Length: 423
Ligand code: EPU
Image 1 (tube, rainbow, N blue to C red):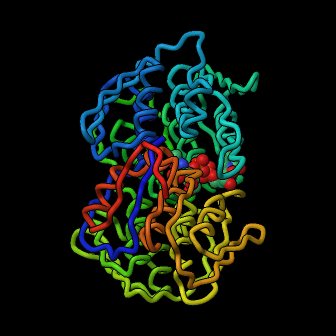
Image 2: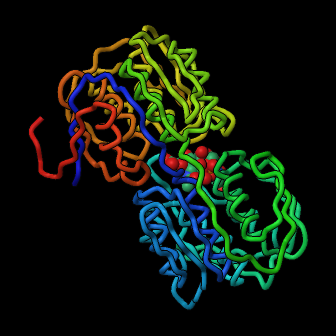
Image 3: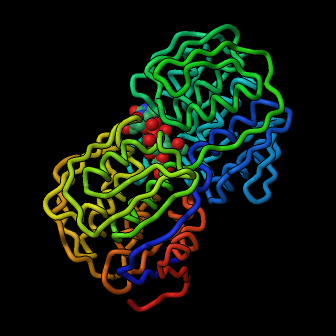
């Protein structure tokens, strides 16, 4: 199992380029199933979840060829008796559920494994299924699989009970090929949804309002060839901005879009970090002194849950007591025990973490439990005295492209290794 060994403390300094957004590239790849023609995606991040999605598309009979950050995919959707998205794939990547909408719309039938719980919470898919039913599909759950069927989906008016990101994407994709018009209400508003709509419109769909809470879709008969550049990854960018802050460093993330990061930059400023919009991205400059904050995660435009763990690492270095409430997922505090092993003083009270700062962190062996928890531990390791070894880096590889070389370029000493190492 691969690990990171991090020597700290370090002051990060320099520029780093944002990779493409994993959570925008995944639905974009699923959307290629909606057309027989080739769809070319650029700025696709080279991360494990993208490779998993490509394998899934190939398993479905689609094509998926990648070279560097360019992927060309098309969906022939062969079908057959096998499940479209078997448990083996879905359990490693919940975003596999994103093939449900496109397959149903295109082929009239889809069978996808139920994802089950995961490290950060229960994460049901009832909103996806209600949306498909509203479009006229018959949905059946049996032996751990969901099967949805419809001769042709029919446009509808549908309101999400909770603004689910992949739920909105799934139902929006399905509705592109429905007969008539669809109005989706209480949609998630994350930037990745607007990016997906831009791709779908380039493929010939008729979608308006994506990125807002009401999305309108005029169904069309077929979608076609398109080219699309995936947006930069706001969560990756945010992680490097927080890395600058926790190390009292100066980092510019090139390509980062200010408008996607406003909830974070406001909190960085509240903590005393200088943040500026530059000609090519966003820059954060820390001065080693951090004020405590009270932060609560929320759907966009609130503070992203995907930056909660990294923010917690930062607040261990603030002068005073901070609070951090996780409102999106019910169990996303698994990094707390590991942070405390590094010397942090974080207590959990229900959905709120109380972080007593400033605590000197000292390097030791820690275990990553999920993608963003891994990033949190890497950030803490950069600020800790001595060697921090982060185990189970495969979680990190799901969503961060070349993190060790990016951190290297900013002056950090981070090594990847697979042999057991004494700490
Ligand atoms: N929810 C339901 N029913 C549903 C769907 C969601 O109750 O049918 C609830 C969830 O349990 C959760 C809330 O709604 O409490 C929001 O979940 P959402 O569906 O928005 O999450 P998701 O679509 O499964 C995406 C990202 C996550 C990110 C969340 C929230 C992708 C592929 N994944 O997940 O990314 O945390 O939105 O922003 O886009 C990550 O990258 O580390 C990651 C976990």
